[in-house]
Structure formats: C-alpha cells, structure tokens
Length: 145
Image 1 (tube, one colour):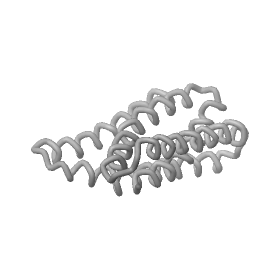
Image 2: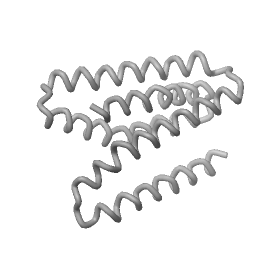
Image 3: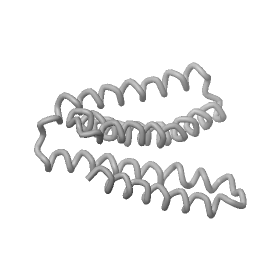
C-alpha cells in the first residue's frame, strides 16, 4: 500500500510537469512522458504484485491503479491548461516538487524492496542503475538545451 501512496504523491506533480512540458511545445513534454512511463512501469508492477501477495483481489488492485491513472491524467490536464503561462518560479517549483517526490518514493519503497530479494547482483545492480539513471537524465538535459 505504501507504493500506492508513493505513486500518488509523485504521480500528481510528475503528471502536472508532463502537462506543462506538452503546453510549452518544446519537445520536453514528450521526453518527460516517455521517461515517466518507463520509470512508473516497474513501480506499478511492484505495487500490484505486493497488493496481490497481501491478499487483495485482482478487482481491487485494478481499480486502485486505475484510480491512480485517472488522477494523474487529470493532473496532467491541469498542468497543460493552468501552467502553460505560469511564471518561471512556479514552473521551477513544480518541477522540483515532482523530482523530490520521485526520489522520496524510490528511496523509501523501491530501493529497500530491491534489496529484500538479496540476489548476488542486487547490491551492485541497484546503485549502478541509479547512477545510470542520473547520467541519462544529465545527457537528456544537455541534448535539450
């Protein structure tokens, strides 16, 4: 259930940032959409698997994640409509909030869950994936400026 709450807490500002990026029309929104989809896919699978393992019904899990999707879609629409002409400080705040929420959710739920499996490669793979993720974000930021 913690991953569900984390998905909402990082999904709302994240989706608003997607809407904002799409409103600016600079290609940033599409890149953000792709990045968020790729990053949220394992989050959703992990959350759904955890809920099913704890005895929740498939129907409950489906509607719960469907609700997250609907709320995030509305947040993206809000970002597209409301933030298109926002002040640069407002935009920076929304993007920082989205980034902070993602990092908080990952460090509180995803990374500890990865170490629970305790495979031989996990202690190396998780930090390497984190570093590669930051490197990819850095490269994308340099390509778009």
